[in-house]
Image 1 (cartoon, rainbow, N blue to C red):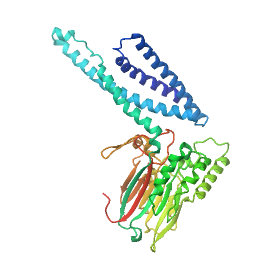
Image 2 (cartoon, helix red, strand yellow; image 1 turned 45 degrees about the vertical axis):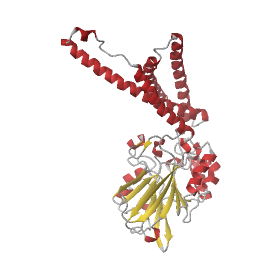
Image 3 (cartoon, rainbow, N blue to C red; image 1 turned 90 degrees about the vertical axis):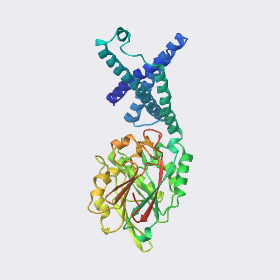
Length: 421
């Protein structure tokens, strides 16, 4: 932990040294040199104190396993400042590349150039305009993170997705499913805002409700203040849920294995108390109009960690020709196991990635850093007439905010036919 904090501190200092070059240029024309010196000194005093505060917050969060409001403030502030400064620095870097190329061109020209060429400075100076442009562009992520840590994390967004299947039982044509995932109730700090998300989910009046894991950050009591909120969600064909990686308490230091197991049992009880049928490597048959589909739920299966989910066990007793929907928290399960399984699973519903709570989603651009870890990290994917839908998550963890990737309420509509693009 100390090594990690030290490396991060050095990287942050180097980034600030580079940013400082732009700040010096911005203040170069000030009439009062005393004020300029005071601002430049104040900048470094703030940065050093901020690094010390952030190092303390990281140590407390990960060594003592606590997350006070002050600790969370430092983590949010660091991410905001880091991304803001990174944008500022990238603009300066673009100018420095231009300056270096210009210097190289002038150097090679001097061998046979005129006196005027020799009188030119080899390296052009920094331009104030570029530093001003860097400041303006850096204001965009700063404002975005400020919004994301205050309002964005509760900016619940409805995503509707129609999915077509040739072999969907006719009685289920038009059947709707509301999906929530990754509540992370231990991170909430605004019950009224959470209720707005619940109201959005309720208003969809879907036939079926499913929750795809990570009800808490670590400890079962985290959901207790919000049990009444989430128990409001009802559906004619029932409410079903599964466990996510955080639900096992793997990231918390327990006094004993028995205490960790007891925590998991309490969490399972909370699912029941909210009216959710928790599926643990098992299935239920959903019947409508004399026809059925199989709803399967597995324990967490994540590539490289907590590979507990047993799809074969969940499929036991299911007609291979039945229409099947699988709840599996981590989309890597679909990538690594489900889509190549001998038994055809029509639709898998997952969560887990949160879209990293940071990214860009527009009709033309869809990007998040999480895509370098998960090929399928948000929305609908298809492979061989099998579909995966990855919910962006209802809550947040680690970074107490969302920027560009808003918390999601999903409504999926099942249709017969060949309408998928």
